[in-house]
Amino acid sequence: MMGWNGNRIGGGKLHRFVPFCVSESSLAIIGLALATITFVLGLLSDIILSPKLFAYKNLFSICGAPMEILISLLYWGISSIDRHLVVPPEIHIEFWTDLMFHLFPALLMFLDLVLLSPPWTIKALPAFGLSSSIAIGYWMWVNYCYSFNGFYPYPIFEILDTPKRAMLFGGSAVTMALMTLVLKWAYGILNGVEVLEVVGKPYMPRDKKKA
Image 1 (cartoon, rainbow, N blue to C red):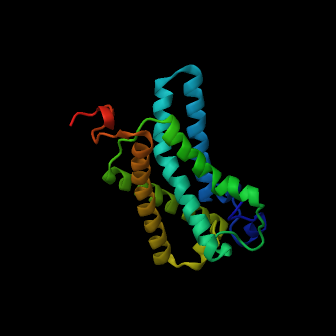
Image 2: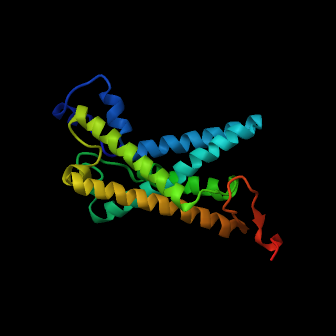
Image 3: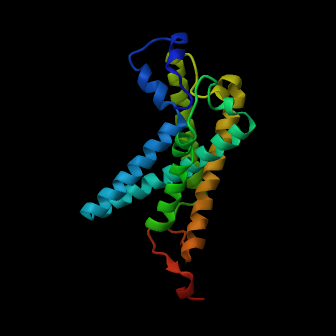
């Protein structure tokens, strides 16, 4: 898994929760967890025909889809500059494994959104609030894990000082919020519908909407 090598634990404080902190401090793992929950809820809602599970699935999708796309953008973008900023030199990831962790989840979440989900009604301000909350939560979680392990999940976190890490997290939060709005727009374009900006109101196909 990118961002972790068990041999590095010796440099930090040993703790009974270290194995959990080490693996789960990776943003890719968190994104995969959200994607897995989204797909499992979607599958269960189809099997038992539960509108409530389907609604929960869509809530996780609002968080998971933009996050997975953000992960792909960050991972492949930073890797194109210097791969060792996101993957320690001692770790080798096979090509297909790399795609399964850092590309396919984003593609599948996008397809689930445009093909199997209702349109999102989230507005710009809540989108920025959601992404900012996730960024702050991840910041706290990464630093909590660092207090036990003595290292960060990604080498780039080691290189950047605290203000620059804060800028990276802030920029990522803005990017995730923008991706939420882009995905909402893309849904309307691909499905030929215009999402009303009032939560709870149904959407109407453009060709049937009154002038």
